[in-house]
Amino acid sequence: MDWVGEALTAEGYEVGRQIVQRGVAAVYLVAFVSALNQFPALLGEKGLLPVPEYLERAGRRPGPTLFRRGYTDRRLRAVGWTGVVVSAALVLGGPQAGPPWLPLVAFLLIWWLYTSIVNVGQVFYGFGWESLLLEAGFIVAFLGSDEVAPPFLVLLMLRWLVFRLEFGAGMIKMRGDRSWRDLTALNYHHETQPMPNPASRFFHLLPKPLHRVEVAGNHMTQLLVPWLLFAPQPVAGFAALVMILTQGWLVLSGNFAWLNVLTIILAFAAVPDSFYSALVPALSLGDAYAPTPPWFTGVVVLAMLLLAYLSWPSLLNLFARHQLMNAGFNRWHLGNAYGAFGSVTKVRYEVVIEGTLDDMGPGAQWREYGFKGKPGDPARRPRQFAPYHLRLDWMMWFLALGSERGWFTPLLVKLLQADPQTLGLLRDDPFDGAPPRYIRARVFIYRFSTRQEKRDTGLWWIREPQGVLVHPASLRAGAR
Image (cartoon, rainbow, N blue to C red):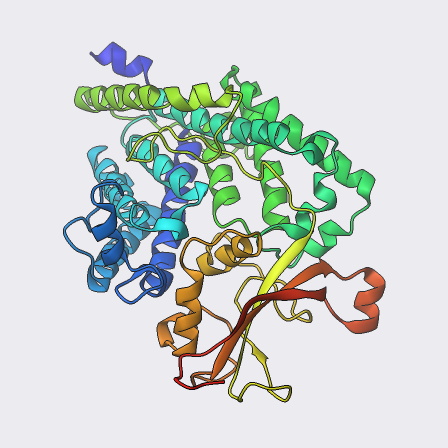
């Protein structure tokens, strides 16, 4: 069995293992902190879409979760804080300093804890990067500890995950929207993306010929380069570096939660130690490892065979005529199909929520609720939040596109009640905790100001009213 273990090890990837293990753990840490901060208000016992009511309706459909026998906000916090502690230990490298079973157990624990959250998270956890994080955490669990060499099969499975992520995104773009095919998508995307960041306006105002170059480069990186991940070194390593650079470009230009950061982390699984030694010749790598225990080799082989089997539907999906985007094929979120922005919106619509303490009439003073990340006040510069995920702000973007799945009316009711949990999700409560008499929602078109408009007005956004989504409503009897 020793020769089998030796054949399945990759001694030249220690730096990559450290980056992947600690990086994935860091993203889990962010995800658990996000859950602690937002889950109770969005999905808790008194949230917009309460989990207890969802479990009663859904039965066993949500999939495996620790909350199957009952959800409480207290249990959610216990799950979240446990995830924070274990993730932080992995970031610091504590479990990795022990035997190979220790990081295996630690990663599987945070994977299971976060699976429990995602499977009851409903629309607020329906993003592709949730499944990506779960799948990545499961695979990374089998990378072993510092005592043994990184398992080659696990590194190969991580490359396969990055391939599905990038190639799937490239194919969905080519199939989904003409603007990707005619190279005009980035004439709009930086302005209409869900949550622009401080640099998005700069990227949007770049010359259109440069946008065409950007789109062409994106197609090359997503459709051609991923195949090179399976080539011999140093080709695979250079392919990974190309992906890392292009994903870094996306980090600079937008707020996509942890999607881009996690992709960068996973791509390091294909970068060999020789690359780092070439940069820093004095760097000491490749210290002698202990022999890999036969039981660990057996566990790794079985787990990777399981993942290969579960990946078969996603492989077929990559070449299917009607490709699915961000789809799961099992209740464990393993072997998923990925993809992003198969279509690009050409105009940015925003829903603005306003309230008033006055009676209805032409003299009523309407004040705007401010969100943390989504555009609102035209004079406010977009902020950087990624890899942190502002879930309500993202859902407001989908709402402006006409997608609402039962959470918006409860949000308006909570604002009319001046619910402290809900107000905690916002940047600005114009009534300082007092309940408004009426509330309404209006629709605007937003666009980035031109350079001249920015100099003249100081505004980051120019907006034009388009109509009313929700007419003035009140909870008070006899209100008019």
